[in-house]
Image 1: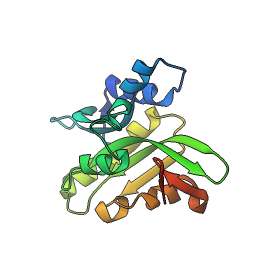
Image 2: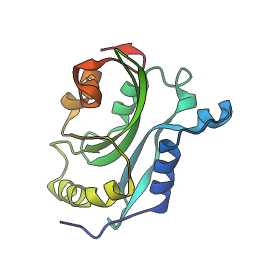
Image 3: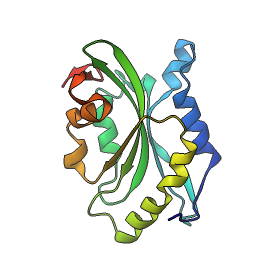
Image 4: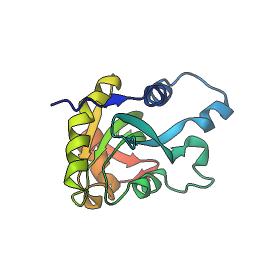
Length: 166
């Protein structure tokens, strides 16, 4: 079921910037988004980039100690969001980076909000071509432990996430 909600061009630009890993200068890398939240506009007609709800690569080690924990803290406890998280992880064989599309729908969010976010999810997912990992999260218990994301990324072969052992 589609909701008729459209995706703002800025959302697509953010996704494309996060997806493309071209060689960049150190300054450009610092401006890259590590995590970003998307929400519905006030009139509930568009999916937009949520203001001031992002983590930049350049923040890590500066204002952000642990990007994963900081990302979890950005999520509102009583409303839904979509998010992109650029996960850096290691398996026994190699280091990897993958974008994860997260649909945050906490159980205490209003029913109307859960319904419109659920019915609009396809609109944003269609714009995010090439996403390998999608994760629906229904509460902090599902997301606060980084090993849960590790399992999503590669089952039991993932040994660390954001440089921290699982």
